Image 1 (cartoon, rainbow, N blue to C red):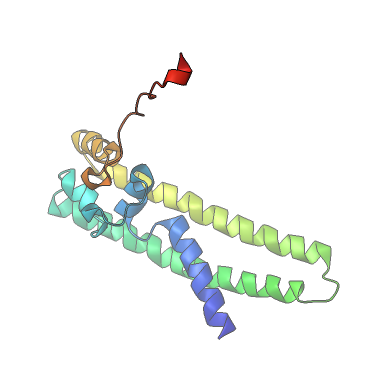
Image 2: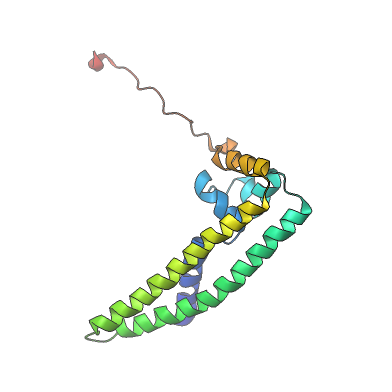
Length: 163
């Protein structure tokens, strides 16, 4: 039971680092991660909106699948590292050098995972034409229509006490 909870926590962490979908990773931060945005339902929706063709879609899916397979192996390693760190921490007087070394291993692995996520995003961008890249950026930077958030801050309201 405890192992499954730890695995779920690590998986959630890794998926947030890796971006479960390629497009999700590209656009979620730019749009604030609005799950009500219909573009968030399909991981390739942003790319489709940018005008990718079926060949490009297959290339992107292939890159994403390769990335996810690599990450899946790393998640298993990360779970093992977290379990080892937990065992160290459960000792009455945990050896400082072992705890720090284990945390450094975890940091190194999560850093590699984050770097590979960026490498994936760069590979995906190379699949796109220059016009599609521009369109993708425009889509990623626009406000979702349903957010209702003003694009510019409202002007301050003057009151009698301001005079």
